[in-house]
Length: 156
Image (cartoon, rainbow, N blue to C red):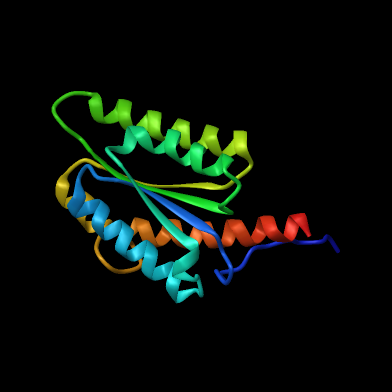
């Protein structure tokens, strides 16, 4: 039988940073609130959680990478909202953010979780930021916990 290594949802002792876009604050506020709630529900100590604010989703990868290279965090969660407009600007921003976050994670070896809502309308974005299981901030926090615990086990 093959050895199987999995993470779990215990955030005890987890050193985590959340990088949050200030753009679209109604959406990102809900994402942050639910991400923090999920971390707390799963045992994270608020003293080991840092929140960093950036202007928009485009700035998420750079700041996430800067935090990752400090060695102070086991996992970083990026939260933002990109809503379709009248020009292709939204696609440029969301694709750049996604690529940059993935690249920063691979380059640093620190999991950097993509918790950016990309939506066609404000209503769709708000739906993904309301309290509940569909909240993208909550989903990102749970993915962060599981990924960080998996890496702990791989290192052990």
